[in-house]
Length: 109
Image (cartoon, rainbow, N blue to C red; front, side, top):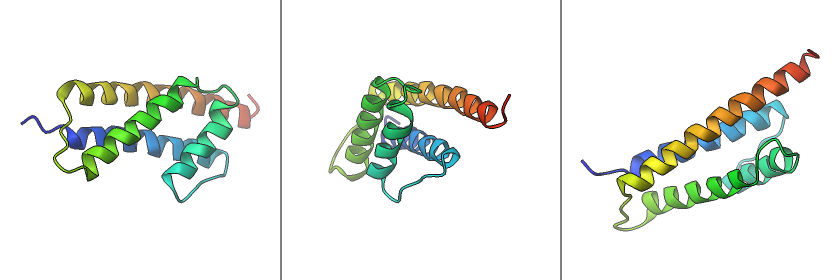
């Protein structure tokens, strides 16, 4: 139907939830999106577990999601939605890898 606004929101929230899951393994959390993003950068990007480019990707996903959710007459194209879905999939793959490394390290293996 050409309405891709919800898909960019879902893509962003999959990234946001995955960041919170990673932070839970560090036993930290925040009540705000900005706080989660700052903690993610502090605990994961700063320590090179995620490339810096992921921070830009997350910021862009948040901006597009906010425009789609709150902007009057905002339209998200199929190409933009597909790019954000693909970025979310890449992010989730990296989260899976990092989580597995953290769990192995915590178990001393």
